[in-house]
Image (cartoon, rainbow, N blue to C red; front, side):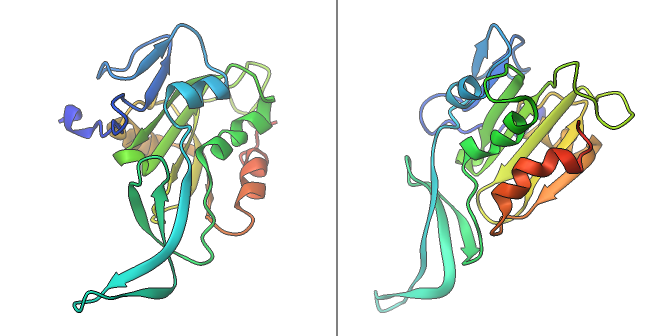
Length: 206
């Protein structure tokens, strides 16, 4: 059953997954000998692709097509993979921008990243990190991992939270979403990047 829940993107010929030090149970992806910086995690997990959107069209039976007012289709620019249909208020958050959430906490260039990857041809991404010992979360002990997941098809928000699960596939992402704490959910609207960079304050990370 677990093997059926990997769903790692492999459109480029390599599995879009990177892990620090220990390999995942499924044996796929790139394994590094040390904790990764954001630049290393983005590169090794193959998350360095762009997402864009175009006006959505409806193909009619007579062979013509019409623009659907206020609707756009999101897609991956390197492979042309379509993701979903969104409204005109939907703001894309690039994968590189998602890492800024973690970099805003500890500073860019810090090696804190444990795993990162893309699922369903790049439609959904995940990032897990270990925070340095000097970072405190309210008055409680730090959970084992902090993670972020984002979808590019308009079906969900950006989620950041703490978990005891080391995410490496769709199955473990589902497990992390099930046991997460201190959750922050950010919608893809106008101020999404500002909210993303300030989300650690809402999560009581100091």
